[in-house]
Amino acid sequence: MHSSPNLGWNRRNFGENAMSWLRNMIYIGDGLTDVPCMKLVKVNGGYSIAVHQGNKSIAERLMRHGRVDFIAPANYSKSSKMENLVFTILEQIAKKATR
Image (cartoon, rainbow, N blue to C red; front, side):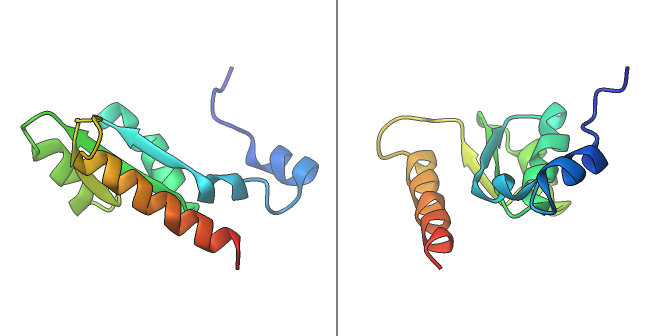
């Protein structure tokens, strides 16, 4: 069985905006196995963040190849770069929603 979503079925049953919920999504990933989801979210108007634990080489490569919007350390504590970035993105999503 093929595991990817049938976009034709989604469009027929949910209309042209079947994937519009992706524009309100933030995908956070830490490696190459996250690339398909990162790209799907990004090309549909959402935001993708590549996290790293010191070695930024994979995250930087993902950024260079247009797979992610942002790079941040994998530190999820209060006042971290990640927290500030996520709150900034949420503000952007909220602004778009009110237009």
